[in-house]
Amino acid sequence: MSKERRVLVVGGGVAGLTAATALADRGIQTILVERSTDLGGHAAEWACMATDECARCSACMIEDLRRKALEHPGLEIITNAKLDGVEGGAGAYDVSVSPFGTGAVSCGQGTDRVLSSSRKLNISCVVLTTGFDVYDPGSEPLLGYGRTDGVLTLKDMDAALRRDELESVLPEKDGPVRIGFIQCVGSRDRINGRGYCSQFCCRASIRMLNRLLWLRPDLEAVVFYIDLQIMSKEFKVFYEKAKQKVEFVQGVPAEIFSSDKDSQLRVYSNGQGEDKAKAFAFDRIVLATGIWPAASKDGLRDMFGLGEDQFGFLNGQDEDKGIFAAGACAGPTDIQGSRRTALATANQVASWLGRISSNSSAGGIHVNA
Ligand SMILES: Cc1cc2nc3c(=O)[nH]c(=O)nc-3n(C[C@H](O)[C@H](O)[C@H](O)COP(=O)(O)OP(=O)(O)OC[C@H]3O[C@@H](n4cnc5c(N)ncnc54)[C@H](O)[C@@H]3O)c2cc1C
Ligand code: SF4
Ligand code: SF4
Image (cartoon, rainbow, N blue to C red):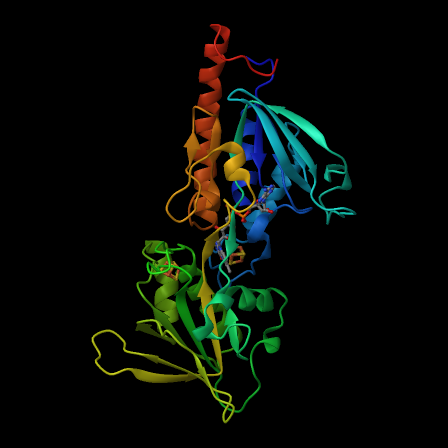
C-alpha cells in the first residue's frame, strides 16, 4: 500500500491527541487538524481539583498529551483549520482544509502549525474526534441561569477555581455560605430527547465539592441528584470524604425561586420516600450541566456520511468508508474514557489499514496514488 498510509485525525482534544500519537507511534503517517489555534480541547480548561491529595480528575494529563503530540516526528499538526470538503473514497480521500480564523495567533503551539492558506490533504482514512458542547441551561427558564444572580454552572465554578478567584463567585457574609448542586441539568431528560447520562458530572461535582470545602471549610453544601454515577472503587473514597460534610438528597428540583428580600435562592425537593417537598435555601446554586452532542452541527457528519445515535452522537465507525469516531463526539464520556476510546480506535484503524493494504496489493483498493 501506499507507499503512504496516511490518517487524518480531526480535532485536537484528549481523544484526538491520544489517537494521533498512538497512530504515529505505530509508524503510520498521521495529520491532526484542529479548528482552534490551541490543542487540548475542553480538558485544557478544567481546574486541578486536588485537596491535600490528588483528586484523579485527569485534567493535568492534557499537558503531557500535548507535549508528546507536538514533539512527535511522525505527526503533522495543523491548527486553525476547518474542513471544506472531501472527495474520493476509502483508502484514497482528498480533503480540503482552509484557515478557520483570520489573523489567528497560536498560544504556545508554534505559529508554523497555524494554517494560513488552503491545502489539500491526501489521506487513507479519517478519525473524527470533534468532541462536544457544554449544555446551555439558558434554555431552561425555570432554572434562571443567566437571569438570576447566584445561579452558576459547573463550568463557571471550574473557571473561578482555575483563576483562583473563588471570591468572584461566592458572597461575603456572616455565617456559612450555603451552596446547592443540581445534577443532571440537560442530561437524563427523556422528555426533551436527552435521555443519556453525561458520565463525568457526578464525579466532577464531588471532586469540586471536596476542593471547595478544602479551600472554604465554612461552606455548607447539598447535592440534589437522580442517581449518582460514581461506582468505581477508587472514586468511592472521594465520595465518602464528601459525605462527611455534604448532604446528598435524591430528587432534583425543577425550579429555582429567587427573592429580592433576602437574596436567597430557594428550591424544593421531595427527597427519597418523602411525601412532602422540603424547602432548601442557598446563597449559590451550581447546575451540573452535561455534554451536548456537537457532532452533527458543523456538517462533518454529512461530509463523511457517518451515522449518529438517537441523541446525535456519532456512530463509532464505518469501515466500508474508512471513517472512525472516538471520544465525546461518539458518546458522553470523561477524560479517561475519551482516551480509552481513542486508543481502541487507533488499534482498529491500524488493522483496517493492514487489511486494505493487502487488498490493494491483490489489486483491490488503490491508495494514495
Ligand atoms: C464542566 C466540565 C468539567 C469537566 N471536568 C472533567 C474532569 O474533571 N475530569 C474528566 O475526566 N472529564 C471532565 N469533563 C469531561 C471532559 O472534558 C471530556 O470527556 C473530554 O474533554 C472529551 O475530550 P474530546 O477530545 O473527546 O473532546 P473535546 O475536548 O471537545 O475536544 C474536541 C476538539 O475538536 C476540535 N474540533 C471540533 N470540531 C472541529 C472541526 N470541525 N474541525 C477541527 N477541529 C474540531 C475542538 O476545537 C476541540 O479541540 C468535564 C466536562 C465539563 C463540561
Ligand atoms: S487533581 Fe487532577 S489536575 Fe490536579 S494533580 Fe490530580 S489529576 Fe492532576
Ligand atoms: S454523571 Fe451524574 S450528573 Fe451527569 S448526567 Fe449522569 S447521573 Fe447526571
